[in-house]
Length: 504
Image (tube, rainbow, N blue to C red; front, side, top):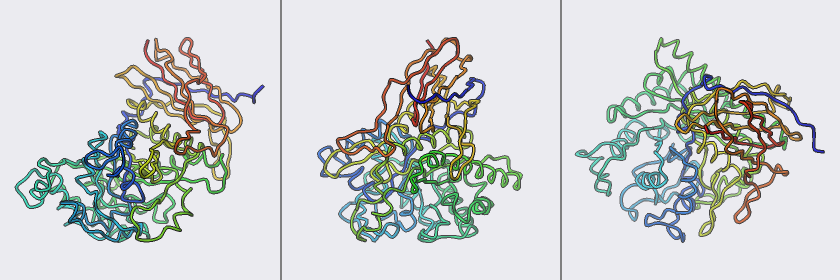
């Protein structure tokens, strides 16, 4: 006999609605960093490369994920980036020292190429402007270049570069991680708040239809958090639509139970930012609600040591190439659950990053592309987590770990897709030894039947996927039963699942 089953309960009702899920919560991020661009999305000599030099095998994998929006061009890199270097004839583009990651930037991919690539993968662009070494002037010129139809210097320059019609980029980030000491052009909260406000004002004069993301703290661990949010929003509250959040987790101590609980830290981070936004709203007597853009999130720690050994000023070296384990995939599933439970405020998010750099998709230069372990929870949640987030009433046994108390073994999110008459339950079983049997009351979903129960499980917490060898992938033999409005889901120990019900 296997281990004793642990029991939990859940009530799911179609009236317990959190919010419509903004699909952009499944966004991602491409920075000029490592092999994300060169050797990742762009490799003109690759056998699958299209006429623009983009790898078709990578395009297909990105399309599979149905990524709705992709942040570009950084990241830390944007804080010393001159966007003009990346437009116009490729042979005239300068090579530059890229200060954030200490590499040589060839500028063979720039704004126009990225817009072309984003179209090829059916994604919108979330464009970041440089508020480190530059500011208002460069930002207003860039938005004129991208979004103004014609008849002015910058818009006509774009047309002379072969882009007759404006790109109409809607979403813009006002700088990146500006409180970070590693940032070129780091700012105090007052300096950033003033600059972001004035930049936003100028950009909106060029294009009043854009939406703007004000820069939050670089992470919840920053000494500046959350006073940075409060002080910068004093300036940007009325001009910005979102504030950004960034967070990465790792398992340096090898404590799996504690690692799987780290989505509770993310939960707390989101709550704190919401409270801070609402405090400024009250203080300003504003009617406007500030939304959250969680525009960098992932597991990141595996490659830190080898990254220290990279020779500076090379072109596209393999940086931040974390090889993800099975347990990483479980935490990624829980991080997605956490954002869905807050879909009333978290409207955009970017898994950082998309290809080669702390990414779900890996490539070999000249060779294959493949799916990392974290690809799967991201894929299923993106494809099936569309619709209305429901608030499940959960009662689950709990455990304590090194940094967390009362960690529920069952971590879940629930999505009701009205258009498709589908109910989807995403669940992580954090129990390292026992399966979890969950009684799920779904009586408000009459005449629904079970379509599939996908499970991601593995005996080895450290199992990884590499080129040509996929050790971690989901199966469709999940155990669950539906009778008379009562669904029983059996979630194997240490696993991630998706259960899908559909109206018969």
